[in-house]
Image (cartoon, rainbow, N blue to C red; front, side):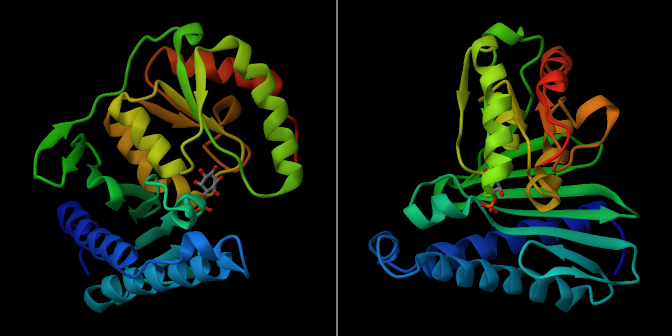
Length: 270
Ligand code: IPD
C-alpha cells in the first residue's frame, strides 16, 4: 500500500528488471528457427503471459489492493487508488526474431494519473525511468545515468520521425494512407518495432518525434510520462488525449507541426 511515488518507481524498476532477465534467460534458443515452422507466435504468447504473471505476482505480493491493466490479462480491480499498466513485451515481433528493440513497460497511476514509468530494454542494457515532476533518466547496465531531454525546435522537414503499425489489415491500410502524407514532408521515417522504445527514443533525442495510429494504453503509459518528463509532449488529435485513434509525441515546436500535418491526413475511423 502507500502512494509514495519513489516507492512505486522503485518497485516498477526491480519488477521490470526481473521480467527482462526472465525473458532473456528463458527465451527458447530455437525461436528463430521455430518461427518458420509450426506456430511460433504461441511460444511468444506464452512468454508474454509468463512475464505478465511474474510482474503482477511481484507487485501484488507487496501491494495486494492495487488495480492492474495488462496487455495479456486485461483489467483487474483494486481499492487502493493505484493502478499498474503493464506491457510485458512491447515489440513482440522483435522478440520473436531476436531483434534488440523490445521492452518491458510498467507504469503506475495514482487516481488516474501516471506518476511513475519504467521502460526496460534488456538486450540493450537500458532502463528508462521517470517520476512525475522529477525528470526522465536513462540508466545503463554499467550504472551510468543520463538525464533525458527531447530535441526542441526541429522543423518538420528536418525531423526524423518514428512510427509503428498495428496488426489489423484495416488499420494498416489507414496507417499507410497517413504515412503517404507524412513521408514527403519529413527527413525520414524509422520503424523500430516497439512503441515504448519509440517514446524513449523521442525522450533521449535519438529521433525527433513519433506518431502512430493504433498503439494501446499499455504500449504508451510509461513511455508517455518519460517523454513529458524529458520536456516533450504526447497527445492525440485536436486536443484529445493519446489513444488508438492517434498518438503523437515530440519536443516543443515539432509537436505542433506534426499534429497539424496529421489532422487532415487521419481517417475518421477504422
Ligand atoms: C506493438 C508495438 C509496435 C506498435 C504496435 C503495438 P506489441 O506492441 O509497440 O511498435 O506499432 O501498435 O501493438 O504487440 O509488440 O506489444
